[in-house]
Length: 152
Image (cartoon, rainbow, N blue to C red):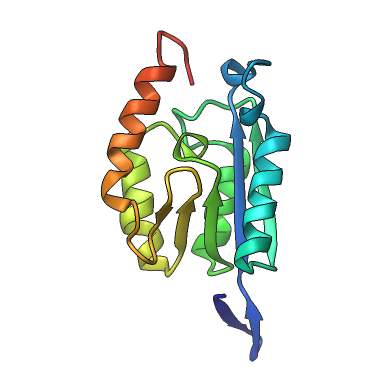
């Protein structure tokens, strides 16, 4: 796990577990999109992979077409301050639906800050490079499936 030196002491960086649910995604037929299920999936994954210092960041009822979400912004500030070592999401659509900004964050900003990004469902891991080349395609397919005139 990633560590940081704070006040001369080595401390494990936070693993951010990010969840988002759009108002429009609140579909009772798709239980897997619920915040509760996202949290459980993220918690189980973090435990299985040995991430101990975890923190949830949850934006409930906020569209993925904007990155001006309260807890996303808080997570980004902490990332810029060197407090976060890894960001884990259930799937790329929970992270966001704006392709250009997602690419900038996951391929430019996070690597420059030494942050690992993981999307569990698509098996994306920026540390190993797994799934990174397919991220734009995953997003296009998910967005066309969800966008039938609805703000995601």
